Amino acid sequence: MTNPALATLLQQPHGRLDMLPYAALLDLSFEKVGGELQLVMPFDETLIGSPGRLHGGAISGLLELAGLLTVIAAQPAGETLPRVRPVTVTVDFMREGACVETRAAASITKLGRRVVNVHAQAWQGSRDKPTAAAHINFVLDWPEQAAPRP
Amino acid sequence: MTGFAEQVAQFMGPFVGRVPHNKRLGLRFIASGDKWVELQLPYAPHLLVDPDHGIWASGPIITLMDTCVGMASMLARGAFEPHATLDLRTDYVRSPKPQATVTARGECYRMTRQIAFVRGLAHDGDPADPIAHVAGTFMFSASKLAGGTK
Picture 1 (spheres, helix red, strand yellow):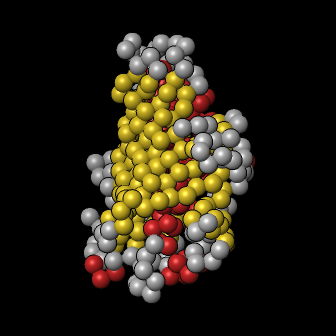
Picture 2 (cartoon, one colour):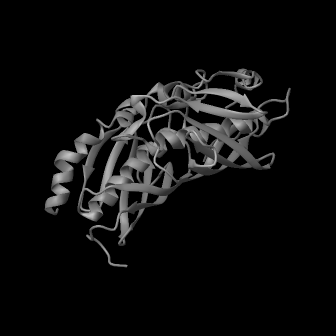
């Protein structure tokens, strides 16, 4: 992701994420809550994976985007943005995803120039009862280092 | 194939594509055996996170793999029993080729009283050159034994 428009968007207090097609599919928006970037995924029938439950893959997608956007928002302003890609994603599922709104936020454990380690959490209603959590290692591809992918 | 595996291949397999979230993404059933499942996710613009560079979001791949290995664990269980993903790790070895159809193959390599241990890979044409590997566990209620005994 190198889109500077996305970094600009994330400076707003809230907004929709339709410029990312998969985020549009999940109907995602974001809100800054006390300085924290939170992603909001409203319930929709198309998120269901088994009767009465959200698909774990949709919750994983939400977690990954919370991580990705938190990494993009943490890049120094005015610099060329790197392309941010997840290399390893580990998701723990703690509770069933009910048919209600889901939120997710991520914290950066280590912000490196090439690797960013992120912990993301998703919850429904009560923040202290997480639905799922993810540990994601992102690799940053800076434009000047751009090399053919293996 | 066992009777249960045949039942899954005939009835449950085609049903996978009708699960609301799978249907939304365009996921489809290809084949299954006694302990393995093959599914496909054809390229669609709504699966991308970065349309400028044609980069897939991670969520659709996780949805594909979670569905695939979840079904494999049910096959290994030998019965339709409620189960939930405990955790799932995805390693992204490389990006899919532009507009590729992603094929997932998942298997359950160990079944215990409560836990199914699963692994799988995703490729875009050549299984020897995968785009992602997954490893995970599913939790079953201990009501019925079909696999191991530990």
